[in-house]
Length: 396
Image 1: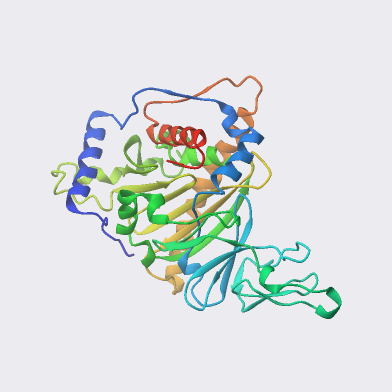
Image 2: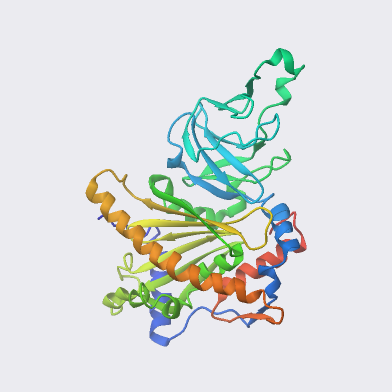
């Protein structure tokens, strides 16, 4: 088992320890100034969902893959995003480019496979063929089709950038969107992600789960350290402290620290000397829809991607990243067991509760919802969403 120390300077780690020791000693948690009231229609309104897909996800970058999912030239992966299904392809120069997965001829799905390696993508409908660079290479029986300017018939392209070991995409082929991940993250948050060295991790498992739940319901669940005792009594609750977290907003994004109960073994040590690396979980929340959880020996990455054309559907993309490649049977057995535990927590507990929540908030007379002062990360998320739609070209 490969444990890694927290990738932060001693002052930052001492701050984590001091915050968690104080909260656990006093029965407290980081808190917002007041309770926040939220209209339940944010989870059910079809018009709002359409605006989110168009005006939010059509402009801001989100994670679409880990770089190790596209290790070599011509390796590809298809990814469903809120507006488009996209084919990500590793180019000969090492870059990753992204194309809308639609043949320019009659709109057929070009690439049906989830992943693979191809130099040429041929449409199964009429045989039009495109290179891995998106250019139209051939038209079946072209002499009977008519004159076509191939330079205008390349696959539609979306902005892509690799940073921190991930492939980021803006879900729009409008041609007027520029992608700049460092700017989007902001200096402080960008540095925090860089310190985690996620480009040195390897994607062992990546799975998708399609659920009839609004994406913000799922984002709320993972911003919330208040439900551990109630929802996860049969799995992780005996090992983690409930309702005790240190929240640090970093511009539009944020970082949250929670404690394992094993932290009790070092609570008699001064914060600046406490070896807390294996006793806390550090979660980075990347607005609008992503969570990266650092465990002592691996990373868990979750994306909550709104399904096209509906207010309630979401594709939950889950990845388990390991510090070393998983090559031996022993390693595979260990990480598969870890994944099974993660599934028991997320699929069998979180999703069960949130399916019921989604059904419940559709009631005619549900009334307003309330996020407590202790649900500070959730408040940050909903307040940011409110500001964002007040000026949807800034997303500040």
